[in-house]
View 1 (spheres, helix red, strand yellow):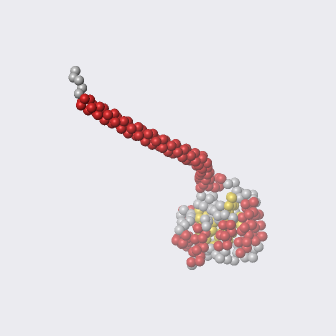
View 2 (view 1 turned 180 degrees about the vertical axis):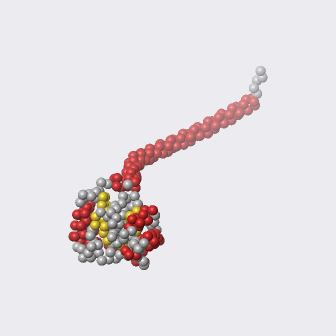
View 3 (view 1 turned 135 degrees about the vertical axis):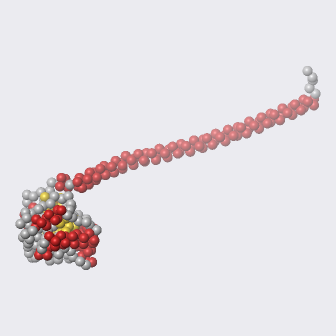
Length: 300
Ligand code: ZN
């Protein structure tokens, strides 16, 4: 065992001092790092708390929204689709009393007036039209369609002797008005009303024309209530209303015959009263469509 020389002792002490200093430095650095981390952790945890709070709020809002809206929407949708599907299947199974308002011989100077009244009551009707040329009439056909009404055919010329001359002339006339309406409005209509109705005495060949109508994919619609507005130009609105309401009595499904004609202002005057009376009697007013059960007169 050798004695430590003073020189060595000094060296050892120096090394010790360096070691201690280094240790302190390392310790200090570590401590500083720890404090730094601690502070960072505190800041982060605060942020996390804040974020959690925000998330909770957002969730709450989302729950509130989803509790109220989607359910309601779904209910609305269900009701809507149910109603629509029922109506598209057959409204005649849904409503106890149905009235179909039909206007023959248009378009005319009164078409716009009739459409305005129908719009006012949010009622859709059916227009059995003739072939009338020119931009003004073309716009009237389009208005009928654009405003949601049914458009049907009532022959091109409405000239009895011409339309009912023969099966050839009848078929030519029918295809002519069909093509014309399709060209002007885009509607490929298969609703038909015979000039004078299928009970007209203007021809003895009605059954032939009926067969033509059916074998070419059309359906014809007569009426079981007449407004009588065709009988005289000077018929008063009161008389027209009375005719309709008398004809309605005891019937659950009515097809009302009226006219869209420049000369028939009183039909226009009677129309609001007819609509209100039909509503009061509990009728649903609907447009004729291809699935509507037709009214057919006895052929003469
Ligand atoms: Zn007519």
